[in-house]
Image: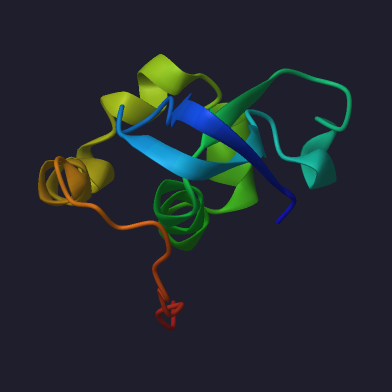
Length: 96
């Protein structure tokens, strides 16, 4: 994941200010989104999105930040991450 640093950067999903963000393609590159819109996400949110949804789901159902924010599978995570000073998280992929 390519990171970029700044003094004051806000994750588009969780709304936290963090020191490093990544760019998330709203339509995955593997599904034709190489030149489509991106949103800045903290590493924990970016990793969690890709562990929660397949590229097919991201392209068809969760292809905007509004849809990701309201996605039922992310609600518990979003409540948990609010206010936490976490910059990086080591999530593990669950077997599907």
